Length: 175
Length: 138
Image (cartoon, rainbow over all chains, first blue to last red; front, side, top):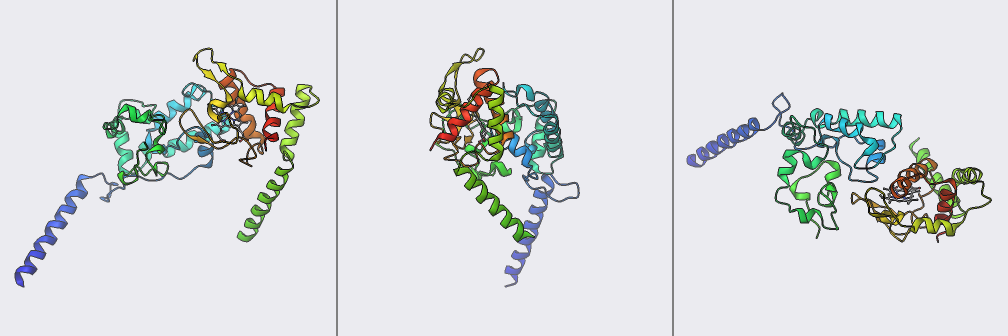
């Protein structure tokens, strides 16, 4: 009986210690609280309307602020197309992207995106080194499947990607 | 307040729906009238609109064949796909009652898509014909 109690005590200490170690090893919010892996940025009807008519609705924290700035500076030839944004729309979308970019987002994946793209200005999410690395086992042929199209079409496999949830549990690669 | 908003929305949806069955809504009728004046045309032709929708053209720089059907498919009542692989809801109002109800949206996409396919803006006559064709689909 007393042996059982002792074991339980040791177990509890081990678990607590292990938990604390895991805690300190991961990113925190500066106050010692573990950050979530992802968040859903506040939604913007304008961003949704202007940017997700043609492509997947990318969470703004998928790129650092300077990347969005570069992309918006080139909106007259956005991957070969003139987006024709009026001044008001341009301003509002820039502000939204800036406020919710990876540099401004308290989530572990956003921090990985910020740190792994230090010293560069990726203009495609798949050019972010950490994101590229996460996809290293997906063959180029998979991205070209008609059901997927291209690596920019996150939602083809990430069923909850538009909400920022890229967890393994919600990945389904279509044939 | 909430109930009122709900009722108002319901009424608006019903109203939009019922106007739709009869043809373009008030705003779009105005757009069509404006296009008619600009084009100096007495009327628009659904047949010309159909031709515009299906016409194929080789892009001067990309050297690829482009058409309205590239993204919207040869059937306006079917869902299409953008170049980035995103699904585009049907363009035909018979399959998608929201289409051709918002002049600002219609104008925006004419500009984008005519540029993409024809490397120029569409003329008032072309826009009028195109809308007339879409409205004529059952």
